[in-house]
Image (cartoon, rainbow, N blue to C red):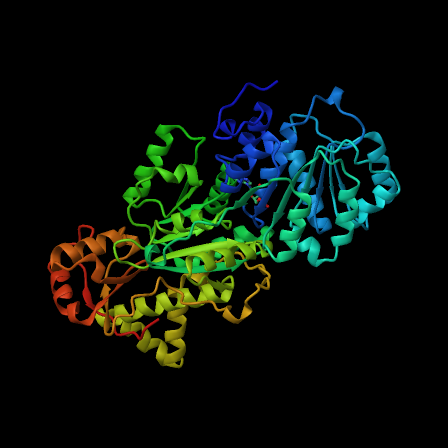
Length: 555
Ligand code: AMP
């Protein structure tokens, strides 16, 4: 017996054993669909929900089913719940989820789908099951053979009902439903609501509670100015993909959201392994641990904070260059709330979302509701990362040439030039100066991250590589500042210096890019001279730095 645990799930009316399973899985709080659907389902009401994958809808119907489960000794052979789904993958996945949630309740779950051995399914059904998760065709097969008795069914769930109709299962559904008791509870979930779904619901649901999790519209004016990019990546490649994306974006301060505590811990360890300065933040940590992490983050000694929504909620983090959704958030509102943490103080923020191919739908939903486009980009290749590093090396070399004081080195070049082409001499020197050429840094993972086809491929584009300016003022100047990450410079230092010394508003500061040894700041042309003058007269991170116009063309 485990001791009772309290969590926000307790107040939804769930059994302590379920709550403790959820806590063990690292779920910190219910998602919007769970908040809306669990209490009425526990009460026995029918539910008609519009929700796509990624919203947490599986738990929304699975938990009430488990909650109503009597003690094992009181259960019969026939199932008390049947969940119908369009595909075998989904059947396997949902069966696994139900098993996970019900692990302290000895729940007997059976996935039933075509293509699997009939014998095994027949044996399991004969032994007795509590929850059957099935595709309609195979379920009907068993009903007709009388191997699946639906007489004691308490709850029936139609999941991804639109997909089931699209796949031509309408008649099978009718036949299965006809074999169930009239007294049953029915829940129907569908990502879209075409008229056929409304008809299905009208015929089979009794006075249902209707739930549409995305009803709340966000006024477009309220949306922060954020460059939004999504990468569609298969689950198994997400960590590697995120590592590369972060290498390319080099965020000055990023908050990465995960769904669960376990994910937060796993990802933190994995990114630490890549040499990133990263800490976790979640509800399982003591206040003292959290304070310590926040102190580090504010001081700029951390690049990344990995957190759950709950843990991030109370944090006053100030400016973040990037917000990263390691999964598609459970609702458009959560998405808008998260990305609102970047793009403040007039500077452009960056929101990055990793989506699994099956979550693509959710991205479309978010776009529709926010009326903003999310660019689908391909995961940077190793070649992209090399190109970025070379670009930074090139800029450093340029700076070094302009700064002069090269006489001692010219001697070396001259002597080598007697033997080699000076271009080759220079190229060799560049190679030595380029960190990726030495095989150092995190450009170590050479393996392929397969591209996954995202639905709107027309927009597939890697996009700008830096936190590039989104302000598009008519005439922008780019200012070079001869101190960067190595000197501990963070965007706040630059904005602070510019605004305090030159008396300009943070709104006038465009994108900021911080490299190892220098930084670039965009500002409108009219303010460039006074800002440069003011910066030359001040200290940045305690030192006087070179300040001048950057003449390299736009990124
Ligand atoms: P679904 O929409 O049911 O496919 O769920 C999407 C993902 O969210 C699954 O990986 C679940 O394990 C996870 N999940 C569901 N509910 C929660 C929750 N309350 N907190 C964190 N993760 C959750």
